[in-house]
Length: 228
Image 1 (cartoon, rainbow, N blue to C red):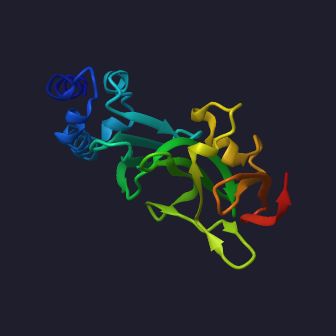
Image 2 (tube, one colour):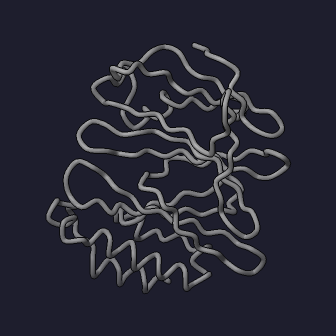
C-alpha cells in the first residue's frame, strides 16, 4: 500500500497545481489510478493514505460509525469551475465494496441518524461552478442490499426528495462568515440532527433571513414551515 502511494507521488505530484498541470489531465489520471487500486485491494479500506492526503492528491471522509469511507479527487481541468470525483467504500461481510458516485461535488461532511430503524447518512456537498456561482447540497443515503443508495427522506408538501440543493452567488455572501463555512449558513443542520433548515433566496440571488424547516420524525424529514 505504501509503495503504491509513493509511486503515485513520484509520478504525478507537482508542488504547484497550475492550470497547465490541470489541463494536462494529471488530476483525472491520479483519480483513475487510485480508484482502480482501491477497487482491487480490499485492505485499502483500513489504510489512511496519509501521503496522498499530505500532497492534496486525495480527500478522505468517514461516516461517524466508520462504516463508510469516501474518497474525493479534484479532477478540475483549468478555469474557475471545480470538478470532483468521489467513491465510497464499505464492508459487506468480509467483502469490501467500492462504488463510484456520479456527482461532481466536493464532500464537506457526513452526518448519521436513524430513519425507519436504518442507519441513514446525510452527506453535505459543495458544487463549485464558474465564476462566483455554485450550489450547496445535502443528500440522504443508506446501504441497501449491499448497495449504497440515495433515499427519499426529505418530504415537501407535494413530494419526497433524496437531496436538496441551494444555489449560491458569492456576490451575496454575508460579510461576517468565512467562505469555507458558508455552506452551514445556507443549509443549517441542528447538532442533534432533529432539524434541517434551507435558506430562502430571492430570484435576484439576494439572501433572506428565512429558512424552510424540515423536522425529523421516525421515518423522514418533513417540511413544517418557515423559520428565522
